[in-house]
Amino acid sequence: MKPQIRRFAQTLSPELFHWCRSVHLRKRFRRQFSFDQRLFREAFYPGNRTPEVLTGPFRGMFYLDETVWGPITPKWAGAYELELEDIIDDIARHGYGRIVNIGCAEGYYAVGLALLDHKPEVFAFDLDPIARRQARRLARLNGVPERVRVFGECTHFKLNELITGKTFVVCDIEGHELVLLDPAKVPGLKNADLLIEVHEESVSAGIQRVEERIAGRFAGSHSIECRVSHDREIWIREHELLWQGRVSRERMLKSLDEARSGSQVWLWARARRPSVLSPK
Image (cartoon, rainbow, N blue to C red; front, side, top):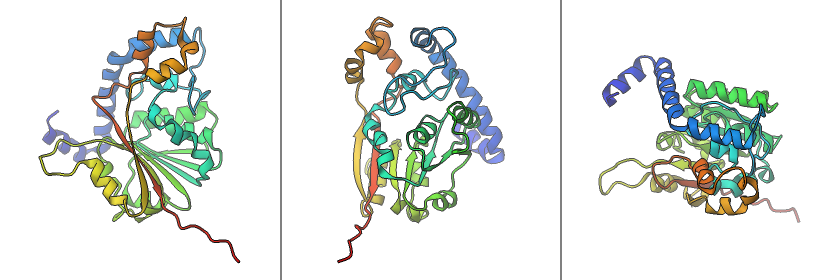
């Protein structure tokens, strides 16, 4: 679909546009990933076993067995976005009152974080209507439907309204992060901890990269750390007893492939909060 036609269709009927796009993408993902998914399921979840996450912070979380956004096998393995594992592991220790997951897909982070820490409310957003249905099903499958609330579009107003007290925002919105995560329009972002997946644009020379522009917005209010994707050799070595004898090393590596077009960058931005002095 040409960009002009896409923009016109999205403006004319946004929900119908998202449904059509969602169905089209699922057909593509099914063709691309169903073979690997079947082999992984047969090796690790024989019979009628419900898939569950095998390693990582969300280990033991029950999971869907259907076509999701992208490959499902890295999530089943627990190796999905392995670069962020220590950050996710520490979520409960931070004492968040709210978690906002923008671009939740089928709910890997929204439901996983609800299981990891039973205290915060979890608000999940995604424009994809199939993803929203899947996220609700995943929450029910894991017994947390009342704690994971799923919505469509996340606006500046809605996001600012949700940031109250100590809030963690995890954002993966395919390039829209530069528009939404604007502290001039969402002042509450200055007080929230942010985990942002960065999607670079094709820009002319002299234009700042998205990573630099977002980091610049929060440089005065946050401590910012950059994470960059790496291969899965460490996971393969650490979990050798898990996969050996079930699948070949090459097949396991293929199952961990997140099908990204290139290197991925995330920004982990922690709000600088004033220290509380003890009374003398």
